[in-house]
Image 1 (cartoon, rainbow, N blue to C red):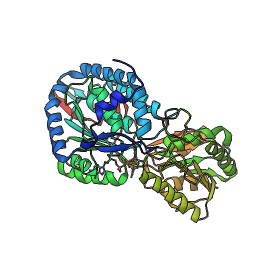
Image 2: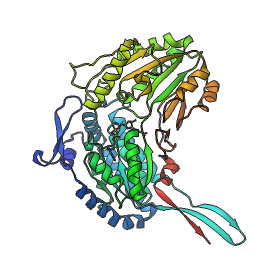
Image 3: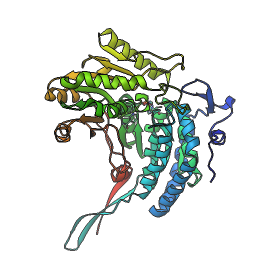
Length: 471
Ligand code: NAD
């Protein structure tokens, strides 16, 4: 195993000649990074057939051997973390530093090891008078992993690692915007895994739809938008595949009266702007009590205005471009609508075309209310609306009024914050932080943000079939 920062060998392994593929652009410059093969439904059928054939052998290796191989895979990812980070920074656009591309590449190895080391014990459900009922967790078969473009490699690993750990084989379908990041991490893992245990099928929505309904798929791990999540549910009527749906979010944050604006501003800012705001569980609408409203707006604006915006590959960049044109257009539309409604654009509110086609300045929008699309819709970009409230009960009602329920946060006195947290309808509520994830702590949404849990023992159960043996 060698370490290197030159991405050419890894790119050569995962790309094809121009005449055989589709160009994948650098998010910042638009230059072509490499060409990927566009695969078809026939390629998918073959991949699933191979995955089905490989599954009994992989399951037969047993937990210890699979864990050992996953550790070797994690070591390989670590040894090539810098190359992987550079590919992510170019393709997806996130900065190398801070909670960016190096963090994502390093996180891949952390989550693989965590899945390898987590053990699901057999549960004894009943034992009396010579009868014993045990609950075992056995592999499901073939797991499909369909992912988004915002944290492409890390989210693929969140789906792949537990599924492999439990003895399933995996067919992954990356977002059409970010195939290279997923192909790269899978290429590294496959240097240590048996053939056909982990495969990637590239392609667009048609390939995704074909996977979701495929008779050879036993489980779909899906991370993406709520709209696509509904399509996956329809597709699964065909194959009755089990589903884990990690869908969109519109996470609220509530800043309580008496909060220290200066002390919480940094946490609020990165809660909203991590990955230039393109994060499922980022803070997307901030409710601030009237008594500290101007102070919070002021502190957030100072941080936003100080941010170094630039290409992901520049060591100085703190925020990067929007990952693609579609997302740039969504952010622009939402900010322009807010402006037209009379909201106050305190800082930002414009593109930075001198840096590239998809750059947008960090934007704080004040004097805006529920009902504005910037508050009600998922902006998924470097802009946060700050909404004034006077009554905590009202803030809770407004926080809960969204059809989404992924994450939320409450800021201020921890005892009061906990009381408020208990009343928020979301999969996770953070107190005096937002968006921190831990491979051992279950993560998932409610309402329009989907269902099922990832990470830790809960994540392993989601990719296993419960099987009862009664003696
Ligand atoms: P998307 O739904 O457009 O695409 C996600 C994936 O689904 C892609 O690979 C795409 O090709 C595939 N796809 C598209 N149509 C399909 C269909 N009919 N059947 C099956 N697959 C299909 O989402 P996106 O724009 O890539 O990602 C952004 C969204 O993902 C945001 O809403 C964000 O909040 C959400 N997200 C959620 C989480 C979470 O953990 N809850 C994490 C990251 C992103």
